[in-house]
Image 1 (cartoon, rainbow, N blue to C red):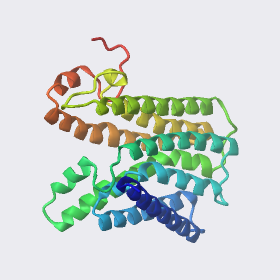
Image 2 (image 1 turned 90 degrees about the vertical axis):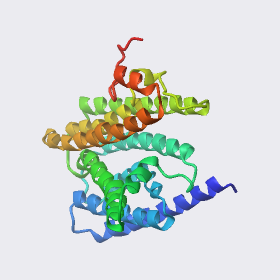
Image 3 (image 1 turned 180 degrees about the vertical axis):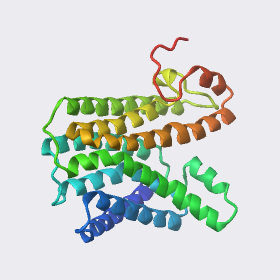
Image 4 (image 1 turned 60 degrees about the horizontal axis):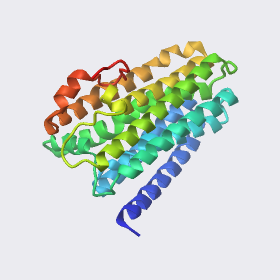
Length: 292
């Protein structure tokens, strides 16, 4: 058995333990509303994975959290005795969520090299700390807890559509499904294009072909579009859920502002041809009218 496979099995066992702990917490919260059950279970799971990150001295334990835990949370929500959401909409939403989760988990698995690898952003953020307290705030707060809160808020539209009684299937459900599938397809295509590009990369160079010709981060565009599709599902359930747009806005800020800023700054430092590409290519939106 090679080292990478061994490390994957360790990750698998860790996440099985994490999911089991979430189920235990969920069952203890029988007097709480579903919205609060999701929040508490989500934070408990974050603490569980953070502890494993500390034990293994590798914050990339959290990488799989992004795609695995939302599926678990929504299944717990859907099967809760007090959930009254439309069953057909629930199937549609979970089909879209699973499509998204499988793609993201697969992309992580093929790019992760085991515990010898840790996301460069985590290393950079922790490297700027000067004492143990700052290190804890960055490691637990910035790397684990803040993304968890952002995902929770972006997941709330689906939680509300699952938990509370809504309308029958309608046109907006079709729009949401189309957007979700389109978003994941954009991500799959951009992932594969970047993967193929990196296989043949021999020097620091910028990817400028395929979807990456029209956007500096087409995969992020797909990510933002997917989370917005969940909001459309919530609107399809009940127009009074319109305030839940806050989740999509926060996810946009996390990805389009925070992540893109770090990615572009690093690319400017490492790739001599990136500045020209950056000046002519939008950061997120796919500009299909861009000309060479």
